[in-house]
Image 1: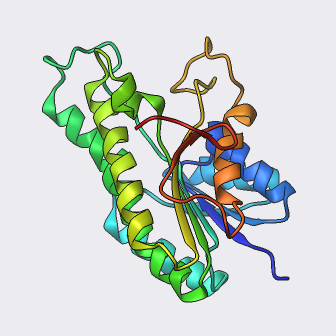
Image 2: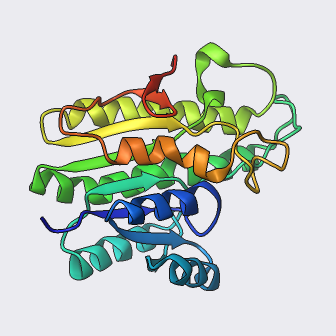
Length: 229
């Protein structure tokens, strides 16, 4: 059987890079993407992935990515929307600049939706696909608390996108799920986080490699533990 193809956004470091390595080890052909050309090419060369410069906030980049995948591979089996920003750490919701909220949504929400809209039709055509939206427990309404208004809201919106797309794609062979990788030692998570990038990536890899009878429209941590919305 021809090797499956996965595209991971924001994958030149951290959780995305760890997920890329894990999928390569499973025999996937991995497209490692990010905004910085030199960082992307260096990371891809290190592990044998295919580099792709992709800024998810740019519509033209999404269109170019789709054209690249069509020409280079002719298919996409897994899309992992991992690219994300955290711009309001330590800022109260009553004080967070609206510009920071808008910039957060540009990447965390619109970027993920933009890529899903671009690649879902290709997946439906082949009757197979896995769309993985990297969310956070901070986007759970059940766990909502003070602070991080922009980040929390963006992940809650991403969870809703997951539910809507999963419902619309039901029966097509395309599964759509949101995952919480945990508190991971990355540039965003900081050095005090308890999980390594490899441990955090397990949730992404699990959702990207689900069997045909796997769940869709869910919110999970680890390898399939449901989380409250």
